[in-house]
Length: 452
Image (cartoon, rainbow, N blue to C red; front, side, top):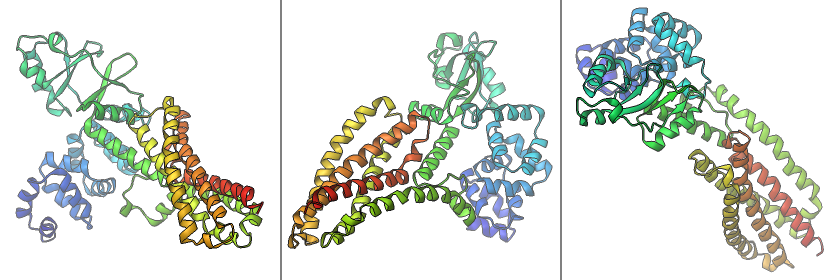
């Protein structure tokens, strides 16, 4: 890459205009690729002041930490002065104690008070991701006065497109957008043009719910109020996108039976990956022993002369198909829960729909299984082979029916008792369905084939 080559060759005159014209996100990726830590502050010092702060925000946690350790106190103070307060809080939360101590020592008293206040909110609450850098106006102001207030105070605000109207006690009364102000008469008061039907959230609300509300309504920011309806901050769309990305990553990890981690895969150590994957694998290993117990309990049936080989050979097919069917249903329900399309009150509607789906799927797959075992596995040439094929097909049908119901109901039940639906997703449901499919299979085999 040209920038890294110029940096290595110390061609700073050519490097400075090149990086000054770049986007902060692209620059952050370049910083992450720099292996020599001594080059990090060199490139950072070349950046214009505003661009340096924006680039710092876009860096991943490891790169931020590496850079902060190389900056002197004056440079660190300059970075802190350019950051929005919510970005400073994010930095505090992800840095080790030694770096946090330096950051706080270079922050002014007002910033430290704000950081301490934000850190007192629950980790997953709206208060923990909000910023106090918003424009507050008064109801009695004219449009002209509002513009004057924005010019004087909005330079350090995170967003000025939406401005909030409050009373002297900071109670939220309404909002006005930049479009409202631009199209209104200069002499009009904000009380005449403001929108009083404000959608807001409380400081204790779950941050994922707040982020989805911003996404659903297409807001650039959402006001956050306390229990007395006083405006204490806003959550901006960029923070909402970060929350949704983190939540989606966490859900995917849980659905794959992995303890969530906030580090990128390539920057996570082998030991760390092992530790995060081991707990669920141990749980699933223990739960899978039930499958072995069922097989052992029905050993006589599964070892029948002639039929035993076929019955044993078809077990992986039944367990795999049942597990996949349950995972399909759970994935759709978990997505519906995440998007607020499905609630616990919809349980019976969902179950009834999945029953019809599973009957159709079960019938088609059972028929395919019957033909496969009869002709491809050549059971037609074996005495009572048709009955054996029928046992396998019936087991397939019933397994799919129950697998779909389990995959549908478990996430909704988990949500009802305030567990993460993703926890009961793919691996957990697959293990339950494996045990259930073997039980159904052996029950049919004993009942039907035991009399032959």
